[in-house]
Image (cartoon, rainbow, N blue to C red; front, side, top):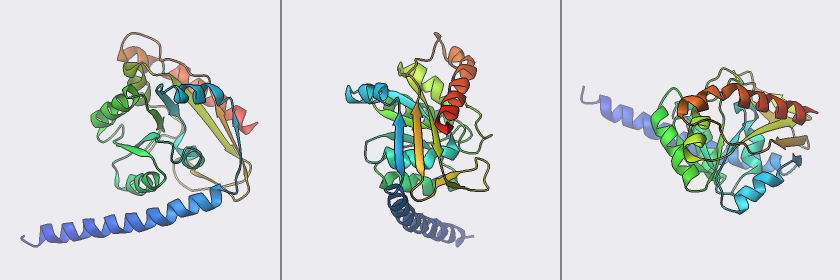
Length: 223
């Protein structure tokens, strides 16, 4: 029994070292591929204005479209919500190397901490990027956490659609997209919108409204 804890600690240390090395490789690859992408942003000015004025904004992007956004928003002091699951650790380390502030938690684990972290970041005037269908789906099904947090903080929400002309798609629940080198990457920003209503329940009931807006910007990005 006395050997169990040291063995566990050794495995944890090994996993942490592995995540650090993989994140270094992963972040380097993202930068190398990303610099070749031909990126076009559509209707970004309202979001840029909010951010320039130090106003909070919550950006919603589907989990499978996260990679191009990680590149585009790198080193801009953006906060992002990343799962505390083991499979989220690598993404967290990569995001950290790309200059993101991390908020840890998810709808299934650490939900209260995640919600509190989102509210605090928004109230501090931060831009927050959230994948509302993460960390494990269902794919493109909007969970209420980001809307509730934005409602409590009085921050506008912006749906974001991303499309790549050529990409690899992983065989994962979200069909994670990796744009190929020299691909045309189109990013469409919706108009900032406050979550309507007076209570958190109202924010939850607004899910269909924002799900529709997510679908519309995705269609616009795809052309």
